[in-house]
Image 1: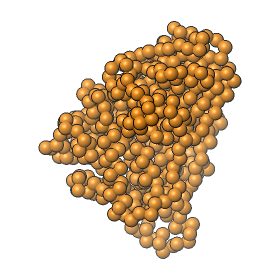
Image 2: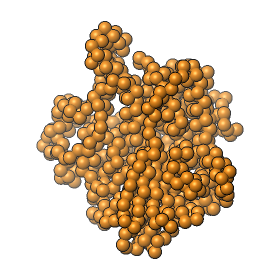
Image 3: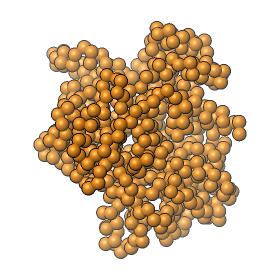
Length: 606
């Protein structure tokens, strides 16, 4: 895991001092080495910060040159050994044991098609000196960040936005459409736009070519979700699923540094733990967010599981007493707002893990792949039955679901999947529509219901997952940690999306195939648990605190033309008096104000 930065100037030469300063804003992403190269008559700057994971020798430092190619690479190609062997049969020789050298020589051999062979996570660019072009690529699901900006024929590429706005200060302008969409829809990373005007994300599963001579930029999708379905019976599907999953874990155990894992009482991380034990002779460190005073604490379940296994369980207690300072630091690294205060326990895990490991295996992506968000499918299925006039079936399923679970599912469904008109209606009911000053909104494709429940799963995987990956990368990189995600092995994703939906989900229970695959490897209390616990967060107490009140009632916030002041004050007072709960909406407003202070106000004062 590393950080990348590139500037391709059209007319001016690179400001070398400013370039290096901009790159060093990413030092937390790569504390082991920082290096720059200037080429093309000093009109092209290539910068890299390195977190050494494979081949710790300086020979694998970047930018990495081969022939006329300069590679600047962030991420890991987990099947690099197999690709290297293929390249060796084609006559290529290697001087390192890193995946970096494999990437640049794969590009030399196969061109842009090389990324189709990669099993991993990446964001990289290659300067082709002879052709005077830049090739850029981002992994299939957007695990690794890649930002870019065009300005007067120049191109800037980076792992973080701060490097771009440091080098080109004129780009430090708020994107009010993106911010307003976040306030209304709680959306973050689902768009190619960022909170900075004219700074963009490269869409996952896309390559980009930039012709330096004429300034032409072309983007192309290189991978998509499979549409064809497999003809496979359930028993064989379970066996194949487990084989692919365990191989995904095996590949992600490749490292020359200590590896650990985040571990909860849930099925996803437990399956990773069970699989990882097959591929290491060393003890693994696990890290669990613990809330001893809450109704349910996951750590005792973890302790029972790891007993007599080669796993050392680390209990991580979360302290919310200094929450605003923690949130302020998180927003600095996220470079945007986010949807939930529960990100703080994740930060606590990473902070503690950095002293013992450099790589963490995590269960991110399982819910979106295997139907873990059961409320979505419950309501989508009921919509389908209603639209099909299947009244008896509809009544039967509503009875089986139960009134409380049905109501909870409706609330969660409409919050996350309701169309824009329905969401606007809900905002009017809660008074939020009167508070927000109208700005242009970003357009997100969505539907109110789905006739094919596999479409729901696909929408979750393509949409909401991107936000979680954005948070995961930013928070792990705060502490120079590499996060690896077995559930996002593209072979596993392709296989799952070619299976019938009922292999993954039935009434009230998701992850069917995953549960059965690991029923002999994990205890019953894990296999049979269908409740999503998640991280505890005292959001209402945080929002009602004096510290937050001072921020939201400050002149700086009220003068930003984000809210209508009088309606907002009434809404906030209702919340403080306990008449209404606006915690989530107010939390988003708090995040926006902290972002403005950190990025816009501080920039204007320098």
